[in-house]
Every structure is written in C-alpha cells, then in structure tokens.
Image (cartoon, rainbow, N blue to C red; front, side, top):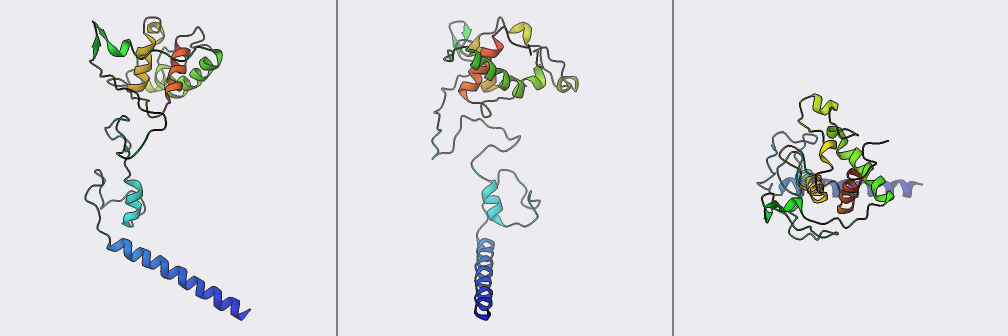
Length: 199
C-alpha cells in the first residue's frame, strides 16, 4: 500500500513536471507577427496569452466575417471532391453571361433529388426568400433586401440558380462552403420543380 502511494505521488510529480516544462517552452517561443487582425492584447479565449491557443485558432482558413473565397485552399491541401472551375461574374459567351449558361446540371430531377433539394433550400434560402419563395420573412422585414424569387424561377436558368448558390451576389452570401456540388444541384432541381413552395 505504501509503495503504491509513493509510486502514485512520483507519477503525479512527473506529470506536473512535464506540464510546467511545456508551459515554459511555449512562453519562450516567439509569437508570430500575423494573427489576421486579431488583437493579441484582447485574446478571444480566456486571457492567457499562451500561443498554442493562437496556433490552433490561426489556421489557414477564412475567419467569420473575413473577406475571402472558398476557391483559395491552403498550399499543401488536396480537396477531396476536386475544385470547380471558377466562372468570372463578368465572363460572357456570345452576348450571354457565362454564369447563366454553365455548368450543365448533371443530377437527374428524381423525387429523391427534389426532396433533398427542398431540405437544403429550407436550411439556407428560406430564411430570406421564405419557404414559398415570396420573401417577407422576419429577416427581410428587419431590412435585409431579398427579392421574391418564386415569380422569377421559370425564367432563370438552372446554371444561374446553381451559380447564385455557389458564388452568392452583391448582397446574398455565397453558400459554396456550406453545400456540396450535389446538394446545390438538388436545390436547383427542387426550385425548378412543381413541388417548389408546397408542403
């Protein structure tokens, strides 16, 4: 019993020694200059300026409300699903905007695709455009401009709707980060279907 207690105390001392060694080593490490605009004098965590917190926070990613694009990946990363070719907003094909013409919809408008698209629309679009596409939601009533899209759906191309979800617009945020290629095409299939806006 006595030997077990001595062994346990020795183990705790070793663990404590390793912890304090790590804390001291972290305190002596040089702090990088660039923390993407975050004020190191007012840290976001618990007031302890241990730089390993900042190392974990300051990863190669777009921070909330930071201007950027999901097309830019860390140098050594490999996207699992590949990268879609970027279509510039002003690019044209003949007299038409390229974003109105391509890409082509590769997803068949099956009942499953339409149901999945409704779920995606309800999550990302309905907050502003409403479940029936006629806007007038609490978000728009508080001043966020959001047009009724239901009357426009028959004349908007599938590519236009897809690219609007992918890239966003002057006010509308882009949802390319939050949705997959298949989910965006499912959403297009739903918006183009007779089931749009129905329960």
